Amino acid sequence: MATISKNIFWSTFTSVLQLYTGSVVFIVLAKLMSVNDFGILSFGFSLNALVVIVADFGFSLMVVKDFPKLQQGKGTYLTNSILAKIILSAATCGVFFVYLIKFYEGEWLVIGALYVLFAVLASFIIYLQAILRVNNNFGAYTATNVVYAIGISFVVYAYWQWNVSLKQLVGYLLLAKSVQLLYALFLCRSTFDQYDLKTTTVTKLVKNSWSYGVFSILGIFYFMIDTQIISLYLGAKEVALYQSVFRIVLILMLFSDIVTNVLLPYLSFKFHQREDLSILVSKLFLYLLLVGCSIFLAFTSFKSELMGYLYPPVYQEALPLILPFSLVLILRTVSSLLGNILTVSNQQVYRVLAVGSSLIASLVLNLVLIPLYGIIAAAWTSVAVHIILFGMYSLYGKREIPSLQLFTLNSLVILATTGLIYWILLQFSETSYGVLAGCLSLWFLVLYIIMKKDNNFVFLQQVLRENGVG
Image (cartoon, rainbow, N blue to C red; front, side):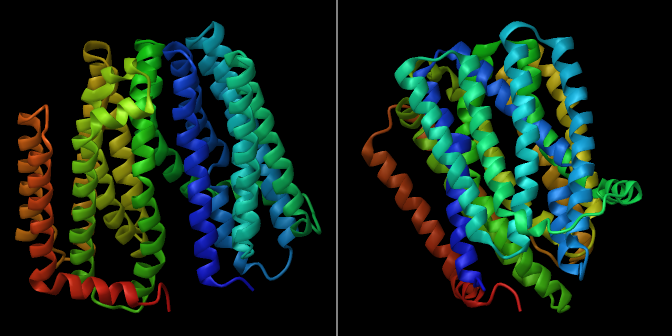
């Protein structure tokens, strides 16, 4: 039986692999291909993110919840789930193919169609991976990602060595994803030991997945829809510039994702033990704010060097996007905690409401502002949308924990210091090492003072020593 520590190891290794296949590979491709081709490729990949979440429709989350409760008939449950997913995937393909045919043509249409198929395969892989996790087989779960990582590495090598076309590149990616799906099916073969296909069961599963599907769809659409709107109103170059910064953001967001995965079961245990969470959550918010602001300062301070190292010179035009995206990183880092509070307190409906409101704001603002002001408007719209999300999460979080303290003196000092350091570095565009060292010293001094105050460091040590659950 795998232990928690082993599962954490496999989960971390998997996150690194997903980071490699989802961001690092695309940064490498940006160096190898023209801006126009990278823009079309990025359009397809962002479309894939939307399609995969619609095709999955919350089934991968639902199976994690339902599977442990099934004393018998697990194979029947899974086969009916697969049938339901096939039906939903076919409908998803139909909707997105209509979208592509109506708004795109030529290479855009072909790449988009290939990525729709890619996403459907990915949705089944995600479902099978959920089955492996719920069976406590995290090693096999990681193995499926290793297979795809190897496959996509070969694809990038082929593109580099033989200069294949963009269509061929995406076709090879589709082939690599197909191999991953077959391997995942092989690993899950013993789980499908019995089956009894029933229309009523399929219908029931689709109905039960509704709440999971809606939240998942809203959650990804509000964050990813901007690239689709950019592709409609602007061009491949603008998509490429926008996605070049977005790829880095996805890498930096890995921390908040890991923290979310760790805090969710921890807070859930505390909540169901009816413990007072006000002090714990208030301090966790402070720690996450410190981390978010640290990432903000690092990203904005070395933006030119980072973009120059990762991308060809033409991508320096994307530098103005880094400030708004850095603000988004802060907002998402602290919002993840507040969202977890709503989940563990059985107030998931408020998360759906908050994410739904954010999606509406994103659609309206992007449709109005992108045609007028371009990709910079999309980046700042993302800031506005995340402010709305954070505000609603804060409001609903205070309802669950009335004594929750977010905007304390410590928090305000952190934000003020972050703003001051950013302003100083902005004034010295040709930043000297002396100015940089001074700002770094100031930040560590504030960090030291904040952590010494109110036993913040001692409290953090106590939290880190506690068991994750139980």
